[in-house]
Amino acid sequence: MKTLLFEGKISKVAIIKVLSAFSKKAYHCKLSPVVFKKFPDPKLPASNWVRVKNIQTGICGSDMTFYRCAQGPSTAFLPMPCSEVTFLGHETVGEVVEIGKDVKNLKIGDKVCMQKYMASCELKGFKTNEFCDMCKKGNYSDCENYGMASKVQEPVGAGMGDSYIAPEGQLLEVNDLTNDEAVLVEPFAVSLHAVLKHVPKPNDKVLVIGAGMIGLNVIQFAKLLVPECKIYVMENNPNKHAFAKKLGADEILSGDPYQAVARATNGKLYEKGNNRMILGGFDVIYDCVGKGTLFNDTLRWLKAQGTLVKVGYQMTKTKFDETPIWWQGLRIIGADSHGLETINGKQKQTFEIVKEMMLKKQLITEGFITHRFALDDYKKAFKLLIENPRDTIKVVLKCD
Image 1 (spheres, rainbow, N blue to C red):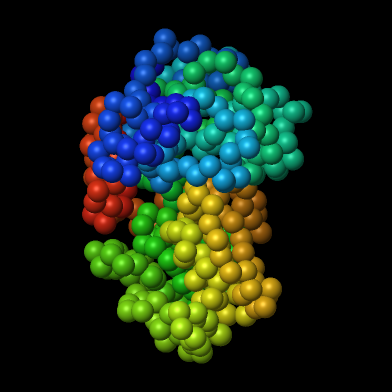
Image 2: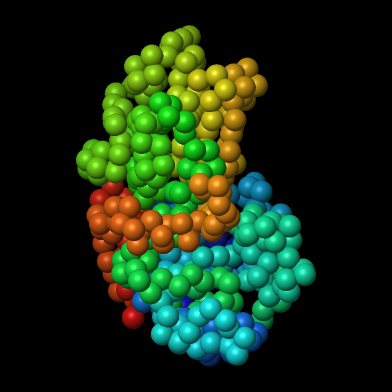
């Protein structure tokens, strides 16, 4: 098995943090903790596991966090007992090439997506009766055993490699999707999960911050589920404005952001020096960027009793003014990955909903994949994302 992985040694991460302050070339040097490694093909650790040969894999923002060593020393992740190795790549489609004797719902030759990644009792080799409450409910991304050591001793691999091994329950069969549709299921699921965390009401004024992969699909799903809501987009890259409108955005904000928010919502803007506050802002804001300074602003762009859905993130500690939260009665909802959803009165996994919508041709999937690289050229792909992010939406690595 040949696979790309992150070696989480503090010394390696520290070196890249120091060197990258002087040159972005440091991310791609031989000292990087992100490396290709070869392992003997691992055995299936249990009878309900399978082996998957990768076809293609998308590069996610979390992969970029590892590659850029962007993790901060003061985040909530730091106290977690960290694995020395993290296998990269979860926006992936592959083919099942081996199955254990107790695998029930997959067969050799099936095309599959990776649904669960990193967080999940199942991936750690726990038995069903050992699952945490979140995993029992199907909310694997909120796994309460995240910090526990894995019982699986084999190197499992992931999407950025030639193959990986996984328990059957980690995967979703996608035989009827094209490879390009299948590789988009995971990032589409992230966006849908965010919208389902707080579905806008008809006639709500909604702000989507960021028209990257996740923000564009927040627009698409919000408009699909609630056509009557009005969606505004804050995105400083004009190359993405037309696509945002194609997916359902009603208006692109421009100019000074506080003035633009006030105009769009008929809110009242108050200013005293550099301190600004809006009363009567947006009903809902989906922050799909996650910069620390932006969090402070989004709280001031919501109307009273409005809701901020925090989708984008940065892996460093930030500071913000909390007064709008209690003064205006705001709700802040975190939206990480995907899990068990309630939609139309039924409970389904996010991946299943996205797959059904794709098969019914309810979603636009063309136009998201902007660049393709061979897996061996992964450094060129990451370099593009670091140096020219405005030119990309989804970069895909071809693994076969």
